[in-house]
Image 1: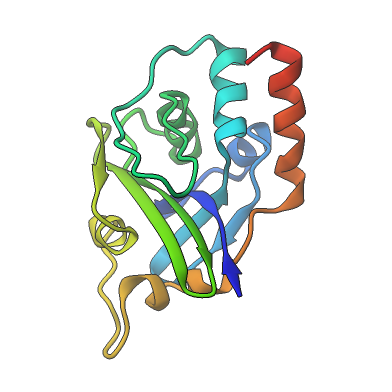
Image 2: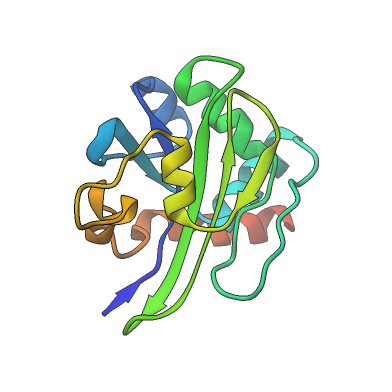
Length: 163
């Protein structure tokens, strides 16, 4: 069975109107977290469309294509209604138990920094693993196995913009 997602994860409340403006569908997770599926094409599109520049540092060692565009901070700030968002970006790419994961966090609007694992990112968001489980399973990420099809259009939108 495969597991391939890329997502922005927030702790606490978010603005539903902002989610609509950004074409994001909130998915409730355990521990008071909300997941918003994104892709590299999604963030590349909005970065170009808004004229946001730059990327945060992220060392890829293969595995999932990770969105490093700085626009993710703009999106997160709008979703939480504050200029200093705390959020995680997570990505998985597994098939039959073999694959990779990647994660980055931003705390109170600080720099976006890579962390070793999705569990590390979830701990930054305040998740404590349930007994006999890890943070990933505790919040229910195992139930979200693929990126929704509605985000596929961002690949074509990037092509149209020449991104």
